[in-house]
Amino acid sequence: MSDGNKFTPYMRKDRLPHIFCPGCGNGTIMSAFLKAMEKAEMDFENIAMVSGIGCSSRIPGYMDCDSLHTTHGRALSFATGLKTANKDLDVVVFTGDGDCASIGGNHLIHAARRNINLTVICINNNIYGMTGGQISPTSPKGSYGTTAPYGNQDNPFNLAELVAAAGATYSARWTTIQIESLVMAIKDGLKNPGFSFIEVVTQCPTYYGRKNKLRTPTAMAVTLKMNTVFKDAASRMRQKDLEGKIVVGEFANTQKAEFTENIERISEEKFGKKTLINSAYEEEL
Amino acid sequence: MIVIDEDLCKGCHLCLFMCYKNVYAISSEANKKGVLLPYVNFGDRCTNCGVCEVICPDQAITVDVNKNWWVGKEDNSFNPKFSKGRK
Image (cartoon, rainbow over the protein chains, first blue to last red):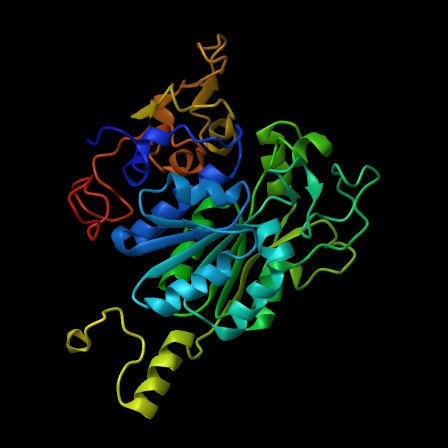
């Protein structure tokens, strides 16, 4: 018998309880990531977490590992530099939907195009939660927000399919309610040698729920569960029926040449040695 | 056996929604933080599936089982590669 929670040994206990609202999905994703990391049998000491700005980007602050809290939208750029400088690190990026899709959208598609070995967990709560409930690029059509009092008229981004089309080798979308599938997807993403993107649709009862008449976490969880359509079932449905639905599943799972390995191969071809070195002393190579 | 940490729980009641055996119930009195804590009403129904443990956003629920079933080991050492002996 163990005493204490199974996930708190990986966390900075003096900072708990965390500042997320009651019922926020970010804490669930912390637990799901830790469980997936245990399933993938990774070394927790070798993980570096990078995050941008937002509610979800506070997650690495609660983890007891190396973490980097960067500028808004540039988490993937910092993570690319980190991974290129030290390719033995397992770099995990936690971003929100405003951080990843809106201001850092170009970084996202170009990191996917390069196929650099990162694991990106995009926590999509359909709204800008930290700044007071503005409409984000992934807000569903017809949803309400502070900046859309008559309903959002724009079509939302389909992030998992965007990243799959940009050339990522692993791309999946799950919600916090399908918790076992989410854990397996994060595990597959951590094991995949290449750009892995996992979009997690979460509940935000404080801002999204308040504006859209789903005030309790349970009401948001029920709507998430009701609106979920699996990918194979969605391919047989008409476009009209798919409006407002969340298509979950795995959108890409392939193998391609990886960015840091390409750099190492070309430097050994041209110069006969590794040009990426961690040590200042060449004999330690 | 299920242990709920009173200091960490914020009272979102997602565990009540996710538990498919309806083990939990809401207490009628609030604690000192004003949170209506869930409590284990039907502990004999629990199948130790561990969904409430993962879905809890505040890491307040611990489902105590004798072995760490997802690693498949007898003892509770969490990650075999998790170094420095922290547990």
